[in-house]
Length: 159
Image: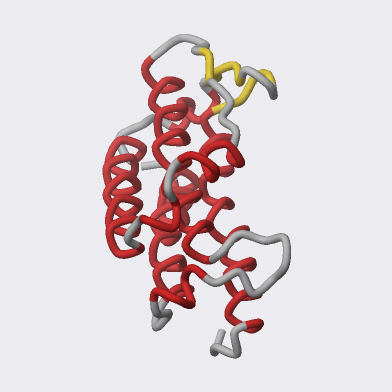
């Protein structure tokens, strides 16, 4: 096993725990609150992460399985507008996230180090390696947890 790939996969698997900790103890009203003007609620942030997780996993799977596949872009704001974020259950969302990452990690851990350099072509951003897509997935949750912490502070909740 490649130490670098193993380290990336461990970071990838740590994301759901980080997200789960960031929403711990929040009730339904707090999850749906928008205490920071112009920002999504915590539940909207969680749903965004969970909706994009299978997209990121699909991109990685395509790069692994196909030769230079097309990787389609997705509009996060359209997803938020149309996918009933405030009607969704945070516990269910977290389970979906954990299951997707667990399955993807099992696949990633079987790869050869050189597979990280396989590429696909993103419809808006151009060529992307598997390592770039995996790194983007790893960074996605910590990026959004900062916004959840901002909301917790605005609601007077511990961070």
